[in-house]
Length: 187
Image 1 (cartoon, rainbow, N blue to C red):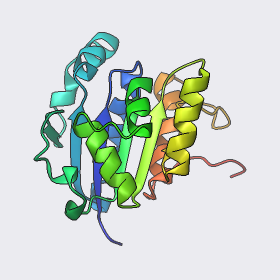
Image 2: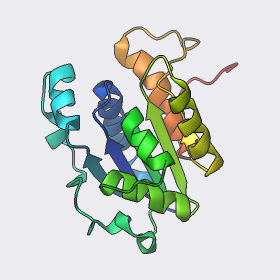
Image 3: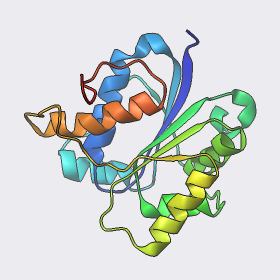
């Protein structure tokens, strides 16, 4: 199996627990990964600290890139990163991607992933959606991206908040074509 090159972007949308559990899962999948690059939006770390009451984002062994670092390897298609996951994805970031506005490393990388026909997975954590959100999600879907809302499932009978959040994160990893063990419907 070919090892994967993945970018994870964290925006300032509420839902930092999704990013934390995604990082935790990637630690367990290291045999499937060649490289992971991390990009936080300008306020994502502040939201993480508020919601999770820690700065554990600094404790993970993944290389972090500044949101304005256009010299990051994945800012170019020639670096051959195959997957980008934006978790959680703010509607502002989603809108900029849908409209081709590459004003930071997150939106530039999403543009690169789409133009290279690689896998872009966005996890919006917003309710309700307005028509602009829906049209932007449609545009990204038509361009080849995957919209995977942070909508948990309950057929696995989750026992705590981490179990609930993991139902979304496991699905995201499955969409990213990574081998992950989780309870599927009907099994």
